[in-house]
Length: 112
Image (cartoon, rainbow, N blue to C red; front, side, top):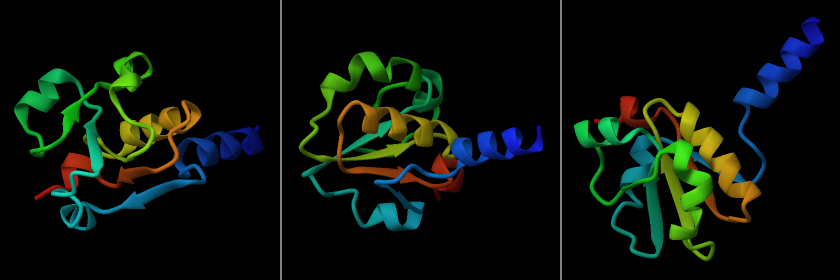
């Protein structure tokens, strides 16, 4: 039973191979790069309350259906409130064939 719990936690919280992890401080260096795309996977209400200029709101629950709004040829930066939803969204994008995916650790909670 303990092994199952450890396995679940490992797969739930450890980043998937091929998905980069950056801090919000590192994100600042990328924000004005037009060759990259930025998505915020929080709910529309969360996004309206506070967001980073240049990020597009595609809520996690809509990502599967709206992924066609993104280019698979460009790197995708993904953010949420704490990093959990963006990590899940990054894995979803990877399964959909996106190659360059960067998850923002700590999310908007770490953004100053």
